[in-house]
Structures are given as C-alpha cells and as structure tokens.
Image 1 (cartoon, rainbow, N blue to C red):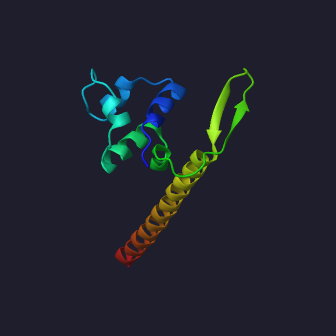
Image 2 (cartoon, rainbow, N blue to C red):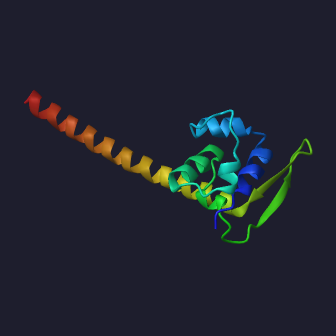
Amino acid sequence: MYNGQVINVLLKERGLRAKDLLEHLQLQSNGSITSLVKGNPTAERLEKIADFFDVPIDTLFQRAKNYGYNVIGNSNNVASITIGELKGKAQAQDRIIEEKDKRIALLEDMIALLKQQLETSKS
C-alpha cells in the first residue's frame, strides 16, 4: 500500500525542500505536497517522485519490513542506510553495466565492418 509519509521522511533526511519536489513534478511550486502525501498518485507520478529521490518505487510503499542500520562517519555524522535501497541501487547499476556491455559489443561489430569495408575498397 502506498505510504505518502515516506515523502516527508525523504525530504527531511536529505535536506530537500517540498518546493523542489513540486517543481520536479511540474506542479505549482507555491502549492503543498499534501495531495501527494495523502492522495493516491498515478504510477507515472510515483516514478517521477522516486526519480527525484533516486530511490526504487518500492520505497514509497509499505510492503516488507525495512531493515536498516546506522553508519557513523569520521565527523560523527550518522546516516541511515536501508538494505532495500542498496539492493535497488545495485540492481540499477547492474542494468547500466549490462547496457554498456551491449553498446560496446555493437561498437566493436561496427568497427569490424568498417575495417572490412576499408580493406575491400583498397583492393
């Protein structure tokens, strides 16, 4: 089930303004995010919200228990990291790497074709 309160939590955790989110969603920046928090946003809008926070869409839903831990940095700043967020980021990075490998293979094929055409044109 959609949990709009996550939006408020993410804004606060990341030091972002509601106005910035509204602008990202191309809504009136002088408005309120109440309709996003309490309403039932469309899948497209949920995707844009997740993109704004750079989190998986599942973050905006109450589905599974959220396991997390605190990390203490050198300057005694504490940040909360959830396993789900890390898994989502790892999966996204895997997809990017897979796409990059496909592009490299395609470019290598194109280079081979161009070399072949060059050889035949010299003959």
